[in-house]
Length: 132
Image 1 (cartoon, one colour):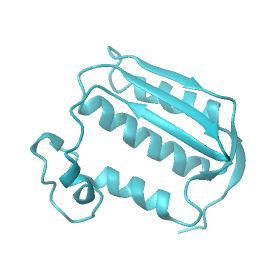
Image 2 (cartoon, helix red, strand yellow):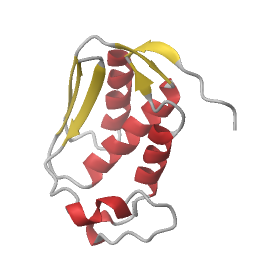
Image 3 (cartoon, one colour):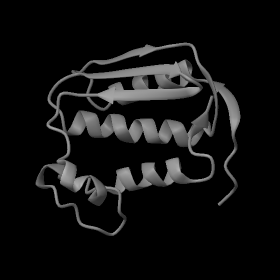
C-alpha cells in the first residue's frame, strides 16, 4: 500500500463534497453543514472516506436528519456528525471497531462494525486524519 499523502487542505470544501455525496444515499433526508473556514494538513482521501462511512451509518441507523459541524479551538479541529438515532450503548463501543468480531448489536444490521473498524484504522494510522 502506498504511503499516505498529507497536504494542506481547506476543510469546508471536503465536508461539502462528503455531504453532497451522502445525500444521494437517501435524498429524502436533510444533511446540513455548518463549518468554519479551516485549513488542515490531512490525507484528503482517507478523511473523505471516513466522513462518508460515518454519514452512511448516521443515515442507516437514524430516522431523522443529520447535522455536520466543524470548529477549531486551541489548535484542534472537531468535526461532529449528529443524528437522532439511539446511539450505541456505551458497553458496546469497543466491540464495533474490531475486525472479525460479529456485531453484538442487533440494530447494526448489515454494517456489523466493519466500516467503523476501517475508520478507526484510518484515524490511528500515522498522524491520524489531519492536523491544523
